[in-house]
Image 1 (cartoon, rainbow, N blue to C red):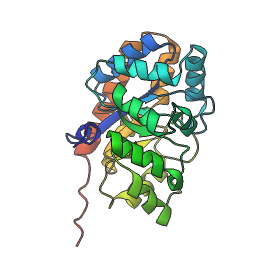
Image 2: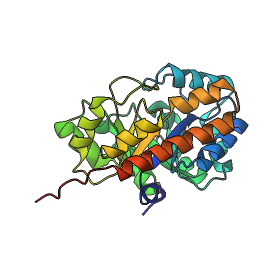
Image 3: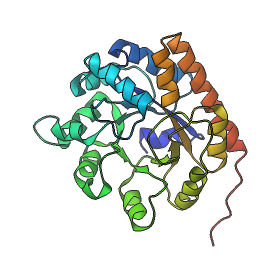
Length: 270
């Protein structure tokens, strides 16, 4: 069993997202430590790309701050290698960077990511039909490949995604881009129901920002929650960042644990 699978063994997993290099690499190290202290089970560390089509304005602005500060794929991997936390790290980025890295497209990036300490990849702009090369490289170097399932992903396409996914499946809570929301979309419950019979952990993201969101999502059957914009906003504020990140992570982790106690057992299949 690998590090990401292990993170789901003791209960629902909290998976915070931050953008590496926002506002600089040294700050990111302290942010990662703060999230780990707050109870993060996996940390999604964004590798910035200039055309982040899956992200809303909050994370787009973080990406721009990171790029303006000079973040590159090689600096990102150096940063990851320097991190000293006992939490699996997942790289969220876009396929262009992976394809352009090194002398051997795809394989070179995955090998470097594994060497640096990355445990998995999320590549939101990679169609599952074109993911065989990345899947093979991840298998070769022991990384998980996590796919995002949208509310509109159904039927044969959903089956194809679930054949390629490993680690966990990222359940998109609502259509659109990332960004903190005031409530939990009803689409979340529908998506979890559609995925219930697939034997891989399900983590819900896109809009999660409050402890009661985490509670409702886990009570509905999720194995974890992903939250990004709420943490990026705290970083952007520049005010007592480490303490606020730790406190928000603790709130979401507690919400997820409470939701787990409220979960109604699913009937066994016959």
